[in-house]
Structures are given as structure tokens and as C-alpha cells.
Image 1 (cartoon, rainbow, N blue to C red):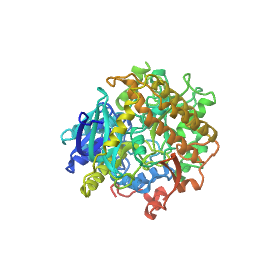
Image 2 (cartoon, one colour):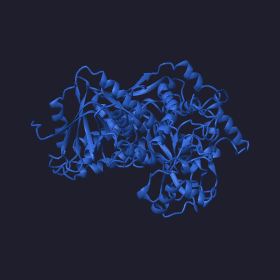
Image 3 (cartoon, one colour):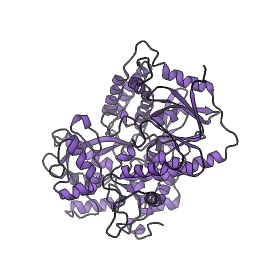
Length: 610
């Protein structure tokens, strides 16, 4: 095959994904003197970072001085049901305040307290007001700041360019083949290292807050290259997505609504979350149980309202209300902030939500409740990485942000996603710099691999007939929605795997018309490869974990098992196909274990920066 007409670009490091994690990683690489390239599947700024509306979690102690990194670490570990990678959770809690202050230095404009400090709000699972915010547009402000800062760093940005697969040289990264979505022209990126920051794979489900770009690209490319995936069974269904009208079903309704006083009601007008307090006794932490007892005794002035329990608890409660016939007219429940706050407060603190419902649902949330229901929102699982460097088991391949697994364990706390991408984006940049500086020789490009990647992509265009990729995608979404949803059983998961196997066969027969230019059918067909890896990995991991923990609920295995905390489920690519296996967890460092299991009073009052 003649490669002379294939566009070739060379960088020291290529960042795949231009959301918050990708840009933060690219900035660090550029500041460390590396020739840095960044590709984005869509336009720069079109990333799910903007959907993290409520705030960025960092124990700055600006609103409650008792907060500090140890309590943030403790909350994160307990929210994740102790399946988090201990070192990742430690680094995250320690470094988040510095990353937020750094953003402010770069131009981010946060809401302020009366004393002029960065304001912080309550959020689900966090012990104290911890989320630094900009109304309900925090992610947008963070992405704006990062973009404005990065354009002065000499970073080469390639927009509307999609990665197809990695090119390896004796098992280490040598580059990546992609294509321009507009023209269909292929491009080879030569690079000594690649950072994946591609987000999750929510488009494998029918009801999701994720937009079209989120097809598990990084997960699929990493898996095919031999990288391991971890914790894939833990998929977070955000409790509050829009349910009406159908055209916008699944669009996120920020947790900030509940953080600023919004309450959940069923069709009887009852604030039902109090009824679900007893059900968390077995699984929630000691201080939460103490708090729950205050609620049950009628003391509604506990530290946080029951609507701000962890997302898995609230999502299951909403599902239970709907299934009991107490749902809203369109299959959700009511989220009411109109009766709790003034119209002026709502418009000032939640401007995006006000306009979102005004424009998409034609309702005024300052006067009437919203209808909301669970929506597939976030992947706790992802590519397995080293906690300190973010390097995978493939030399030269790094990952950060949502596509990397391990930080959040079995359930992510709201607001931890934004601090995650800031902390681990920087660490990935540092990890890559260290890797490249220690390379003894430059990796070489394998032309046979390039030919294989391009042939696989163009085969779809060369068929005379086949299966419509859009129809197949819908079939995949219905399968995942029905069999791998918010609650699961072994029988349903097994049936789901059987259906996925059939869909996988059909993916090999998808067809798109012959021109690669402006060809959405071809784009969809190429995305299906990664969606299938994502869906199969989640389903196999969920089948293997025979317990209910965090965001993974098995009706046939209720409650957490003692064994379940001792292993992670790891997905590997083998010669016989995808394998899910239990990987034993090492004992945590004693100093971190002591913090995670300490009582709140033992940790309060320490310096927030300590």
C-alpha cells in the first residue's frame, strides 16, 4: 500500500480528547517543553466538562473551616465503597485545592463569599460545603479558562478529527491513525506518547446525558492495543435527567438544584427521600447513619438533606417511586425548588437550569416543579492506570479524566469529576514528560499496522450491501437499557451478553455508501466498534461481580459482600476474546486506612491545606 498520500503529523505527545482533562494534560506537556498535539472529535469546547454544572470539589474550607483534604479523601473512599485506588483518592484530595486556585490565577471567575473567598456549596456525599462554583455553569467556566490559557502555549489543535487505533512498536506507543470527519481523509500522528482523555461511553444506552461523541473511543482503542480496563461494572445513573419532552430525555439537571435547596416529591406531593433513609443503614457510613437517625426522629436540620445522599441511593429511590405508581405523568418524579427558594435566587444561582427548562420544556422552574428521572451519566470504570503517572500497562500510553478508571471506585461523588480532570490531567502531563525524557530510542512506525487500520475502516465503504449502522446502534442501546440498567440480575446480564454477541457479529456487516466525505453513516459505523467494546466490558464485569455495591446493584445479590471489597474486576483482551477477571486488591497504606475509617470528629479542625 502506498502511504505517500497519507497526511502525516509528528508531535512528541498526542492528546486525544479536548475536554478539561485533555486540555489540562496538554497544557502541562507544553509547559514542560514538549511538542504537543491535541485532537478533538468535535469542536474545541464541545466537551462534557461543560455538563459538570454544580461545581468542582476541593477541600478549601472557605465556607466551613472544619473541612480539609482528609475529610474529602474519607468522603471519596466511603462514597466509592472503598474500591477506589487509595493513592489516586489521596492525590486527588490533596491536590484539588491547589488546582482550583491555579484556575483562578489563569482567569476563572468563581462565585464569592461575603468575605471575598471562593464560594462553596453542598453536594451529594460531601460532608461540608465543598464545591467551588460559578452559578450552575462551573464546567463551562473551567473549560473556557483552560482554552483561553492553552492557546498561548503553542499547542497544535486538530479539530473534528477522530482517532481510529494506536500504532505500536514492539509493544510501546509509536503513534495513532485517525481521520478527518469532514473529508474522510486519513491522518497518521507520529508520537512518542499518547494521552487518552476521551470521556465515557454513555451512547451505548438509550437514556443518557451524554452527547453523540461519547462512544467509548479511548476505551476501545486502549483495549485493542492491549491495555487493561478496570471497574467497568460501575456506571453512574445520575438521579436527575430531564424526562420530558422525549426529544431531550436524559439531558442533565444539575445536582446543584438539590444543593441549593431543591426537594424531590412523588405524585402524591410527598417528599419521599425520607422513606429511603432506613435502607441505607447497612451500606452508608457511621456518621450518615447518625444523621439518618436525626432525620427519622423529625430533626430536619441535619447536616445535609436526604436529597443529597450519594447518587446511587437517590437514583434507586426515584426508580422505586416510579415503579410503585407514584411517579410523575411522564415517568419521573418532581424536583421542586420553586417552593423552597425565591425566583430571584433561582435565576441568579441556577441560570442555566432556568433557561434549559424554559426553552426545552416550556416551563418556568421558579413557579412549577421539574420532572426528572435517572439518566446514564458517568463511567467510574475505565482504562487502568498507574496512580502517580497515569501510565497504562502499555508503555507510552497514558489516560486521564473519565476514560481512566480507579479514582472513584464503586460510585463517584458529585463535583469530584471536575477536580479529577484537573488533578490527573496535570499528573498525566508530568508522567508523559518523565516517560519521554527517559526514552532511549525513538519508536518506529509499523506500516503493516497502518494498512490494517485503514483497510478495516474502508471495508465498510466497499460493501455493496449490509446492515444500517444507525439501526444497529438503536438495538445496542435498547439491549443495554433493558438488561444492563440501574438494577441488574444474573439472568438479565446473561441474556444481555447473548444479545451483544449477535450485535457484535452484525457490526462486522455494517454498510455505508461509498464516499467518505460528509458521511455520517460511516462515522456511526466506525463508532460502533468502540461502543461494542464498552458495552461488552460493562456487562461482563457486572455479571462477574456478584454483590450490590455503589452504582452496581444486583437484585439477586443484595447488599455488599465481605469478599467484594478485596478485588477489582479487570477486563483484558486475549487471543480468545474479552476476559473479565477478579484482580486481588493489596492492603491499603495504614495511614490512609486510618483516615478512611476515622470518625468525623477525629479529622475536623485540621488545616484545609494539610
